[in-house]
Amino acid sequence: MTAVHTQKLVLEPGRAARNYWRDLLHYRELFLILAWRDVIVRYKQTTAGAAWAVIQPLLSIVVMTVIFGNIAGLKSEGNAPYAIMVCAAMLPWQFFANALTLASQSVVSNANLISKIYFPRMIIPVSSIMVSLVDFFVASSILCGLMIWYHFSPSWRLVVLPPLVLLAIAAALGPGLIITALTVRYRDFRMLIPFIVQFGMYVCPVPYSSQLVQEKLVVKFGPALGEHLFLLYSANPMVGVIDGFRWAILGTSAAFPWPGFLLSVALTAILLLIGVYYFRKTERAFADVI
Image 1 (tube, rainbow, N blue to C red):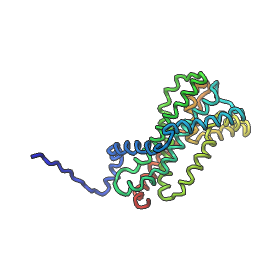
Image 2 (cartoon, one colour):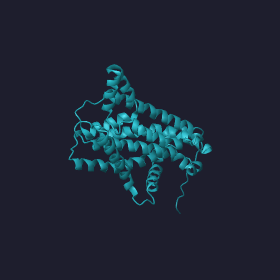
Image 3 (cartoon, rainbow, N blue to C red):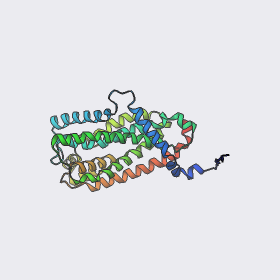
Image 4 (tube, helix red, strand yellow):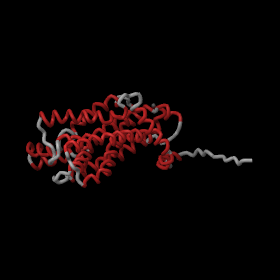
């Protein structure tokens, strides 16, 4: 006779709250399944498939290079071609925009799953952000192609890209968790996100250099006030991410803007903590509200 193994299911008040972070690790297979499913669904029944991850940022780079680089005559950083400067900013920005958009709709899109079984709900928005990370790595082929086309050789600074990618993930995850939780209760945020993404691309130094912003502010308001205003502008989390990517990829001789970058990192950490706290506070009611 074969032995029969039985498992006991213990329902204990407060256990889910105490073991939440342990459960995140326990449900890692569900995280991988959801992330892989989202990747498949994203490009299912599309002719170009995963090539859309390259087509979208490539078209944006071409348009910005023609309009801002050739027609408006905006200058690049250092000796790097303008197209490479834009690409170095477009990659992290496209990741942030996609991550924010997918995360904001992730919980609502998985309403049936949430209402049926228990698992840490944070798995859903985090897995959707991982889909954007896949797109980011695929789109990085654009940068490699532009470097070959322009005969541009990167420097040793590329070794700092991995921590900058982690910073970009944190910058997207904090606001993503906040907006995800708000979207469950207020569906208007689903209409607001595309506007925020479109507006934010021009607020962030994507088609232009942050050095240009600093120079304009200093000329218009004077050195003292101009530097303070530029520091306020650098508080945008994506400004620090984009400046970091450009410093690593372009290898310019200009000094790295440490004050603005550290302020951007600090705000990213604060938004991440607020996002985790607010999501954890509201996720208990997701099954009832959704």
